[in-house]
Length: 196
Image (cartoon, rainbow, N blue to C red; front, top):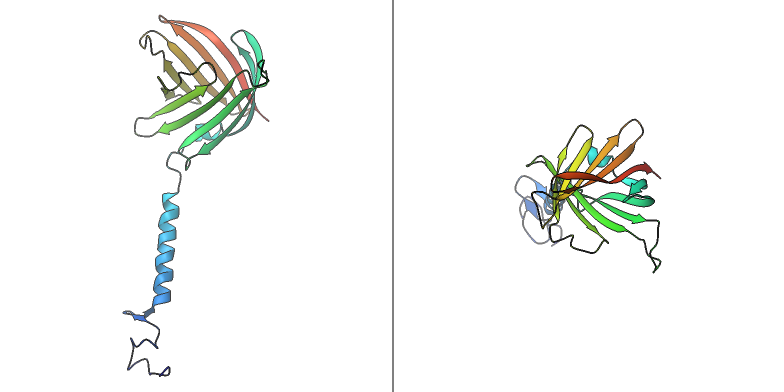
């Protein structure tokens, strides 16, 4: 029974199942699996590419003046969630009374092609409230990103202006933070990021 002529009994259980067009079931399944894997990997491609943000990935040392004090922080930065967001984790080397970093932040930045702007969520250890007015919009300059974090109490006249400026020649970043109160800007931070 196993030696049935294939031309006389093409769909007999003893014969390999044939699909019209001359392909076997194994070949068809292999083709289907290959198509699935190709479409799945295409779906995994990064959706938001931003060359300026790419320069911010890696491990950095932040040094400079924040609130009138010289400081040093460490920053680890990487793309997360299918290359949708750049996440950086910032920790100060200075410690508080409990031996923990005196300052810590987790920041997410994305480039939004549709609105041609950056969006930023900044969560830090300065007393909470990061989710009450969480998203800052940012504009792209030549080699810089400028964000405005609006004050939830007075969105029109108060907030924090944060500018990241990339220096291609030295592969460093300048980071400028100014507080705005009733339309007047006051310097809060002037720091530089260099690669570890």
